[in-house]
Image 1: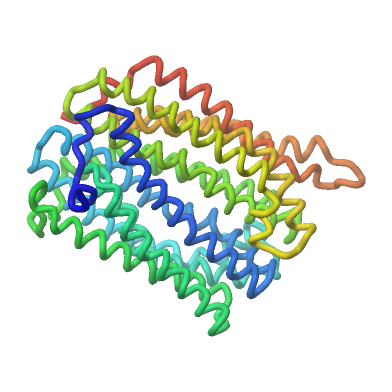
Image 2: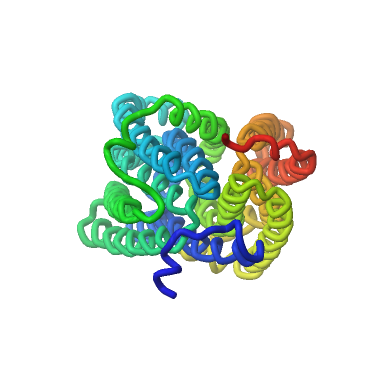
Length: 457
């Protein structure tokens, strides 16, 4: 039984909702563990260093996410290729897909470190980062960038493993790395006094370990895939497919991260306390989004394997069942936030006014999580089928066309002598509006069914 849990799973057989649930549950735990990386960072610096250090870590995240978009694209493309070729039982194409993904990741890491490092501080200055936190922001980003290979390879290699239906192995490796990260966080910050740099170093070390474990796992999957230098040699056809599938998701994340950075510039104008409140919200939001992200990834793998096998009726049936489960989980998470929100905020700071501000802002977002459950599930189906363009356009329109103008518009039109920058709630109001509109548009495009014609050949 234990061996079966840690082996690739054929999701083209059995009851759809059971296959989806069995795949989602360990991945949900894994995503929660991964969220603990940044959450533990925030708790440790907030408790042992102070609110300004908490603001510094949080202000760095939109920029760090922007730097990761390339790997997100590779990861999405890899997962789709692996899922479809695994579902089609095509060993050769599966092997070349995995090898070329690893090569593309290695090259991308080297290029990104060389190109992006010199621009870290100029970007922070451009975003009006307060002088009180800019040095810590720069240190955190520089260390994270130098060690970005660990984060990149974990995301991509775990995506490959999940594409073959094995979500338990990725969970195990991530739990090990999370424990290491937590222990090193406390040691480096509370014990050695390394401050913000300490949490960055701890995260890099933990992610390198998790990526090594994933690589070892893939090399042992000889029953399903071949692994060696032969398959890692770049081949144009696989690189083109990887780019075709992954580029839309990479562009989506790049534009959305850019939108977050633009909104972060507005957030920074409200001062350190509001920045810190938003960081706390982002941490709680990260956990609230975990079921949605997990179901979205599960639906992508499920759809990919079944599309590869040509079972479109099974894809449609699973999409309905998976979305219902995702909405149910999101409703429970929303209820927990509404009931215990202040207790959650209190984990990050002992400043009562900061807890109150964070809680009030979080309440604005609560209704949006159910909408995101629908968006993530149905977008996952479309991506898994090979249609990565439609989710991309929906995300771009809502993030750039709605969120950014609405945030700045509300800020501008609510200005008064008492509130020269407008109401602070503009950030959260614009975000929840973006989520709800995105869910409506996603339902419409999923129902049109054009994603059914995008399978790999």
